[in-house]
Amino acid sequence: MVKLGTWLAGALATCMALPLLAGEVDDFQHSWVRKALRLQERIDRQAPIGEALWPATHNSYNSKAYTNAVSYYDPNHIHSIYDQLRMGARGLELDIHSYFNMRGWPWQWRNDILLCHAGGNNVGCSPGDRPFVDGLNEIRRWLDETRNDPEALLLYLESHLNGGDYDDAQRHIQNILGNDVYQPPGGACQGIPASMSKQAVLNAGKRVLIITDGCKDTAHFNRWVFTGATSESGYPTDNQDKYQRYPSCTSAQFGAADFRRLLVRFNEDRTKIADVFAPKMRIDAEVTEGLMRCGANLFGFDMLTPGDGRLARLVWSWDVNEPNNWGGGEHCAENWYNGRYNDASCGQAKPFACKQLHGDGWLISRSQGRWQDGRLTCSNETGGAYRFAMPATPLENEALKQAKAAAGYASVWVDYTDEGNEGSWRRSQ
Image (cartoon, rainbow, N blue to C red; front, side):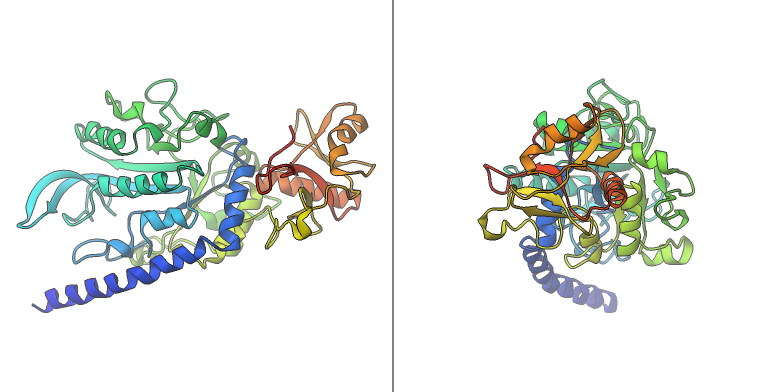
């Protein structure tokens, strides 16, 4: 009776808190950080997936939003999967297990695919854990609500299923996410092509890339999911407390060159059981920025909240409260004194950011001019070896900042404009 009373009190407190949590996420939708993250996502759409930024959550399903008497009592998160997506997470992790489910009243026990915080032997699973389909339905809700302003989503499935359940998992994916899933173009059991971009996914009319941990060799499942990230087997992961800060950019398993080409995941674990048995350094705001400058691009955050300083540190592009079209005539982007971006009047005279056509080098033009002169200036001064450009990633932005410092300039034009369509920023080439 005492246990039942405790459970009822906890359930009531959770229900009372949910509207407050939802209100915080609603408010976040109108913040500068959310606006900047949305604008920034458009900057790296053309970059290979292994270089693009993917804010993500670790053990996304293990949330206080779903805590009950027997499940998710040591959560990684406060907010639901749906609200994590609304806060800007574009990578989710779902651990799927074959286990028996307890649903309805009177309780009915049946085999199912559940979202469990457990090991490979299912120790830690509970019959009260949520079904896989519930997590997929939250993703479906977000996809439907953002249909007119689409962004790509990376979904990692850590799979612990019995053989026949893989086909059931495939049917759930097909029935719920359906045409939004970008299927491996070469058939079953392949990693994501290294050259693929978010834009290529969106151009195909798709939204979701699904990765699992290796080839399961089933008739249907591996035709819907990739077996690894950027042509690598599995999900490249490292321990963030081993990395050396920029510009060394090395970690226990990876070097600077790896960060440039691989989708490398750094995750934390803020559960109480992890603190006891497998403590990891937390990914705070400072660590987030340091990893990002090195080219790490997949962050498995725990306990993400709307006011989280890590979200603000993920903004490497636009400066605070920019772009703002001050005075109604700012339609061209400059890399500012602090390495961030500002919209300015296109007629001002500034030097230009030029990038190698066949390489990673950046230089600053000797001459200055209006933004519209950038393409011709970069080409003429370098004999066509460089082009007027806009950095697509934090790592490219670091290279531009170094070129700026070497040339002695505080502010330079970059190839980014919303002239002719306010708020719709694009490159000229």
